[in-house]
Structures are given as C-alpha cells and as structure tokens.
Length: 89
Image (cartoon, rainbow, N blue to C red; front, side, top):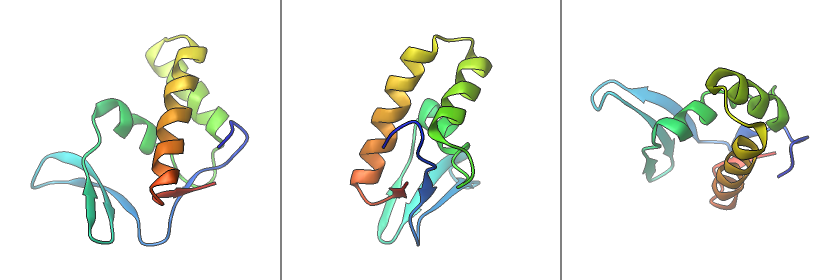
C-alpha cells in the first residue's frame, strides 16, 4: 500500500463498536480482532473514499504529531491488515 491508495474493508469484513465489550472490533468471517486505541483511530477513518495520505494528515492534525512518524505507523498497520485479507486498496 502507498499513501495514494484508498483503503477499504474487504468483502465480509466489518469494523464496529461492540457494546458488550465496550470496544471497537474488526469482524471477519470466523475471526475477531480487537484493535488498540491507536489502531481504532486509524480504522475509523477507513471509509473507501479517503486516501491513506488523507488519513495520515487527519491523524497528524488531530494528535499534533509528526506526520512522518504517523505515516510509518499507519502504512505498517494497513499493510499488515491487507496481508491478512482484511483490507484492500
């Protein structure tokens, strides 16, 4: 994945707030992932319309953090999820 890519969840994958656990959950067929707060902040911005660059820019602004640091973390996480078949570009 590159910053120009527009990530979207793969078919059958849903990202929802689980009221019972009071936490965000990434649901896939026969799999459940519970992202930490940082991962949830990234995944909440995955809408199939925003590019990875736009997600990084929004996070850098929201957290007043260096864009380069956020970019490395966002790209690594999204690439990992894409490798698991949970995201597509």
